[in-house]
Amino acid sequence: MRFAVLVGALFASTMLSSAGAFAAEAPRDVGAAFCKARLGDDEAATLALLTPSLAKLVDEAKARNDVIAKATPDEKPPFGDGIPYQAFPDVAQGCEAGEITDKSGRLEIEINYLFPKTPKANWTDRLTLVAVGDRLLIDDIVFANVADGEQDQGLRRVLFDAFDQ
Image (cartoon, rainbow, N blue to C red; front, top):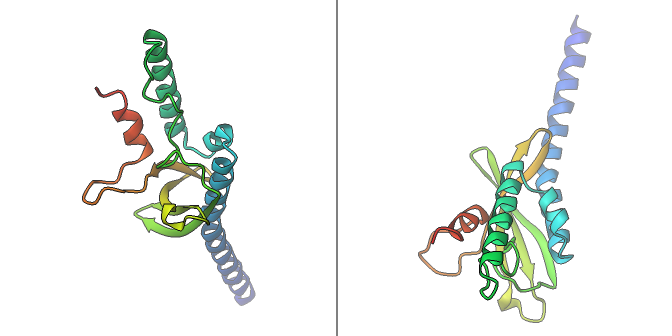
């Protein structure tokens, strides 16, 4: 009986430490995959990292954008430059996953966009990650706040506000 208890305790301890290691590595993996997609301008890879609800919002925004573009061909539609998956349209020379923060059941990971020759141009967005099944997916992208005192804006808010005119 003692042997069974010892083996059970050892198994549970191993599983917990393995789960902890996975949880600590998984957000960084999502951040690295997001960086790779952004640096490669690979929208399909970016979309594959989004939660179903955020991906649906992106699809709806694209559809609404297309309707506006067709109705007013001489004017630039709200997302004429594409869906803004990052705070600025600049193409960074580097991108890396940064600090991870636990926020009430959601994880946030910093995404640092890097310009080695002009470091003052660097900025940091944050990915909000949630568990969907056995995966961590991006549920929002919180953009770098460049205006002091203004509330942080995320991709969800930008997609909604673009058509709220």
